[in-house]
Length: 346
Image 1 (cartoon, rainbow, N blue to C red):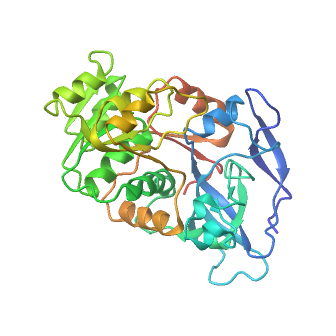
Image 2: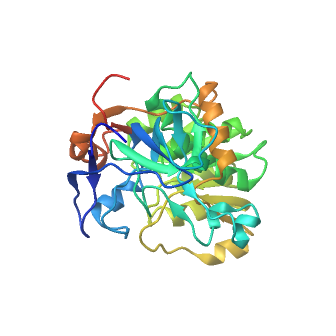
Image 3: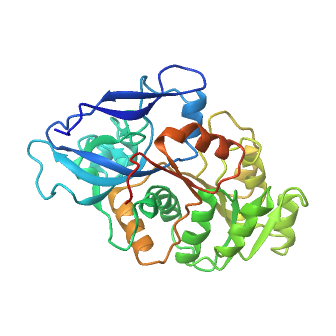
């Protein structure tokens, strides 16, 4: 047990916009689970629709899934972990028994639970998670930097589906956190040339600093025409949609070269329209990607620890200032925001 019976948490209590800061009971880990003292948790783009009431979730819910911290208590039967160990927590809780789990595709689990979406997550002083979802946080990474493993693993999962990127011309639509991780991971996996499409100059500057060969501002150029102009009229051989914006997806399809691979990393919360005939006439391969596997998360942690991928953290807020953190993201004035649920120094 902790020294206190309650903890501070951000709670989504009702449908529609908003959340509440509440003192709620500290969770007890069931058998096979652990309690984690949350030290840092990133705000994901997919958290915003939860707070805005656009994405339906079970209520009440403590969101937050880009979580790192320290093991604080062990549930019955947990072995191989000790209190005080620094850990990163992956969000994918698969049953391990359904046909998709047995096929090695836990992200398609018929009983999939995502921590922070289907059950309580990390926007709190403590959370519980299966011991099997823990990864040791490398000593070279701070707690804040460790929060990058989740979005990076999501990007790696999608790019891994596509197969080799050696020699590919990659067009990334979106220069937010997912797009910026996609730039770095695509380069790591062998992409030859990377073009990035965005609307605002500051994110495009980040894109160039992180390895984009060229950036295209939608305020100055039509992105489809710009990509074709830079590829001898052919289009990109790999296109990555990293915005989740319905109006962007049709442009991504149009910008793809014949025979190209198109990957959707953005999470869509409303329908989009596009010319499906282009999929046929250009023989495009279209891929959707959800979350990641345990090994992909672990590999992403290693890339961050070895300095092969740069973690993205621009702002850090205490849990009590969640509204200010969300407002900054809504105004698109932050690259990546991390929440510290506890006030003492790390």
